[in-house]
Image 1 (cartoon, one colour):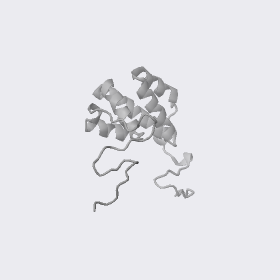
Image 2 (cartoon, rainbow, N blue to C red):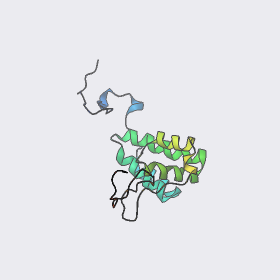
Image 3 (cartoon, one colour):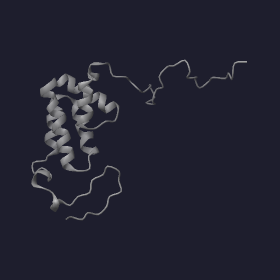
Image 4 (cartoon, one colour):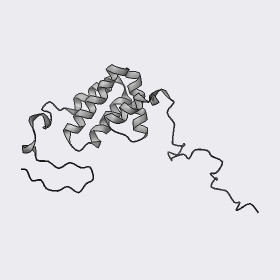
Length: 142
């Protein structure tokens, strides 16, 4: 039986390295620079996305698996689709391999990426007849 300190972070990990099987321990050859260099050889957007994936993961083994999974998509779907999928995921703040897989599966990467910001860098609200502009002065129809 093993005993661990309780972690209160939802979906968080708690573990003791000594209790892990060899296959679960951090990869010995884990080198973030290797994944960043491979991503950079594909496209700057993929490189930037991989950097965010690495920063988003708490444990090195999670980052390693995510990076490897993401970069492997290039051999299955091609670099162009991977670049577009990384752009989509980045735009939606999704930094993991399942997000890329879902985008590729649904072929979202082939759709034009929506620009959600205006010229001032603020989020843009989509046009809709029920949304009033800031200078709207009317009240209720009478």
